[in-house]
Length: 292
Length: 129
Image (cartoon, chains in turn yellow, green):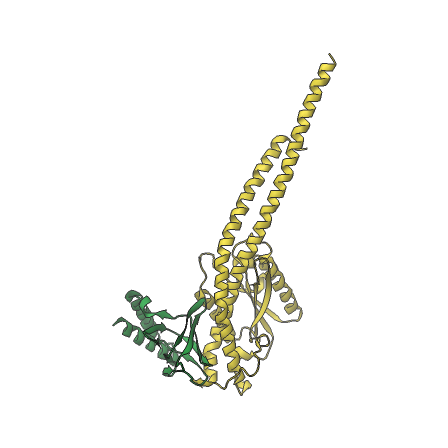
């Protein structure tokens, strides 16, 4: 049985923890609003870009000569996995969810006897992946010192991916991130960006026009596809940022509530032991008086 | 019948502009291109230059690159670098010019890059006049 003093100290410490988690929740909520706005503002760009690419690919008559970024190298020997995580912890299952999904994929890729290369974005993911797959990590990014992540940063990652592709370093590229559904639900996602997956953006027929292209289709595609890679990375970063704040908010909300429950429980304990001590003292006094 | 069509300029982080206009002049990769209502469906991309939007008052934006789609009287411009001319200040423009001139001196750049850079410098210089 802990002494009264011990209980008092515990209650005080839990209360101050609760204050911290509450503050973190508030901060996350404020940041979430901004991040969510950014994620939503970023969606039209990537959506429109995909639809233009779709329109372009439809009008390519000669798939043999289509740019490699679009159709792939025709092999699937080496996989490049880009894992996007946060730079900070204390956000519930956010980082582990991405890593869990990524690791499941790594395992499958390796068991199929294929080569695996990993790029990590964000330091938390690196920490989790390094333990088992450290030797596969070829490049790591983090944006700890950046206050706000802009398209520039996405372009850095995008051009890195394209450079590697042009050097024939990999055949397929998969992006891992959390897509933001709402504050309590974030879905970890694996999106293949090279070659680009087109099945999820089928547009109803009849919506297609015979476009005039200036210059030729393949030249436009050559300009557009690298941009699309950066755009997809940027979209993933934005979704991730919103998910991180959402996840942190929920986690901190839970922590605050748990701390509240704990304080209640400890207070009851404290009061009980206080009463017990008083009763004990009374009995001692009474029995002492009786024995006289 | 109105002679207007919709223009949308979208950057990766936000919608820059959406309105009904009567004419737009684009710095397309192969030359300046004027677009009016009922233009045929078109996909092209931009070189550095000025987008001129004509309505009651003319509006001019500076872009470095971008992708353009025109369909159904809807002009869509995807660009990460659109800036309104009035938002650019002289020092910033000068900085861009000198940066581009340094890049121009690099022997390793391709003809295409050279072409794009020369337009960038030219446009920026014309802004500063």
